[in-house]
Length: 231
Image (cartoon, rainbow, N blue to C red; front, side, top):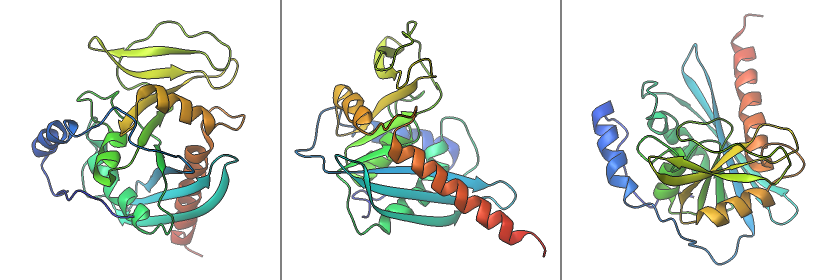
């Protein structure tokens, strides 16, 4: 599974911001799919000492969330850590992991934001536009925007508003547990993004595809760090 759109990664921060503005116009906030039979969760971890990134993608079958395939990629981080530009730091490794998949998923869940971003173009949008796939951002923390008080019961939701625009939904996935932030990445409506995020829940706060992808890359990082230690 390779990107449908070519892009440069050796950019200055100012050039990266301009590219975000350009690519933002290509985000489609309408459903661009017929059937969703497979979903992929993707996440990334890195070793701060060596600046090595570990990107992982796990594909599941829907319904049932039965694992189909998992792949990873290991790369050196080249772009500096700059808030608002994290997709330029993390996307190359994530795309390398996606390129190793034999199964092309119908839907992608990214552990990060989509439209709920200072320039309305977070990593879920970036990956979604480059791969030209329905993509959802499922983040565990708030980046931008405001929202009303969220009821404590599971299934409750309120709009996430940024600069007067609805950029996402704050969703309570379990009773009395912190919410997640669901945003459009590409080729999906916000209503469908919330629906499919809920279809990927299995009793925990975070949807299974991104939760397990997080565990996967953490394990890869720990194994790498253990291998570095002197015997």
